[in-house]
Amino acid sequence: EEPVKEVPEAAALARRAAARWQAPGAASGLPASASFCADPYDHARRPTRRVAVCAGSELGIGDSEPVRVELDLGSAPDDPTAAAAELSTALALQGELVCEGLRVAAASDEEAERARAFAKEMSSLGAALPWVVEQPLASVFDGCAVAGARLALPVASATPADLSDAVRAMARRPDPVELALEGEGEVLVAQLDAVLDALSASDVDDALLSLRSARLPHAARVVVARLAERGAERTPLLLRSAPGGEATSGSPLLDASIDLGAPLCDGIGDAVSLRATDFGGAGSALDIAYRILQGARQRTTRTEYISCPSCGRTLFDLEETTARIKQKTDHLKGVKIAVMGCIVNGPGEMADADFGYVGSGVGQVTLYAGKEIVARGVPEATAPDRLVEIIREHGMWREPSA
Image 1 (cartoon, rainbow, N blue to C red):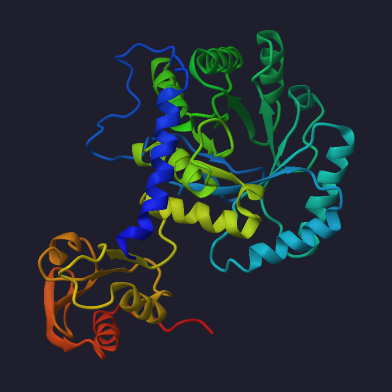
Image 2 (cartoon, rainbow, N blue to C red):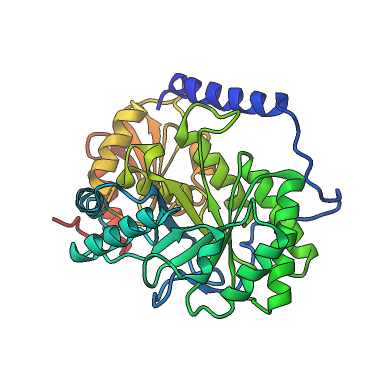
């Protein structure tokens, strides 16, 4: 797109950064030597052990499993039947983008009953997805509201004694349990230490941790560094984005992209969770979660386009041309296509693309397969169709689904 269209987003990012700098700092509670990644200049996903998404599920979180995508629906709905109908339709419209966990909160017996009815309705509609139910710490003794669901236990306000009792009860449960951390700085470190002490005392080594924080990138780094210091570095971690806290950009999309994208680019995060209400519904939140994962190079679910902002050397309408190419190729999952306005910088910026479309003169295009030139001087009017032919010749074409 034209560079001027990037100004509002850039300004929102700048406002967010300035607000962070001006806000009171949150002490990490860790020494300056603490490390949250092995090498900041060489990306590697943090190695963790695998835990099941929920009881009986073939999906796992951690180890070699892909970074999982879960949706936070908030409190169990007042009308489970209507909510299930709306949710199942929204998720079905996302095609290959699969929701790998639905999270609801059930803080009371009434909410627990609604959660059970909601899960039952979803199953009756053919959407029997993994469930995560967030309940009070004491509920670990009574069991999860939804049979087979992962039980998520908030630990922010738990006393060490209550936490120890709950973890001992966890050891007798066959289904996965998540310990939900929330906060930042020294408060967060104290929460984590209490959790690790309780886990160690009860010989529980398969717990999943989740984290929500107003400063999620920093908090995630603090947690990972502390886990390493405590010898629990292989503990899997779920990142929960919650836009709307202090010093946000005003855009849930930008906030979620930063809050989740920064840790993911550090190699931190075995699953991500977005609140559906922050993005106008479950379908939109699911789509954004997968876009963030693709941007962080964690999961590829769509065609990827690489393009530079147009400049004075660009000899065709970059936006219009990119739109024409997308119309023909946006169903090619995992294929990288570069659309570059000129031959000066184009080949360098598209070095990791599978195919390239580069302006080389007035009304002329040079087409690439990888770093190799395949066709020169192709008329602009026919270049998109010739690009499709080249993709087909290299065995990466598939017909769009009906």
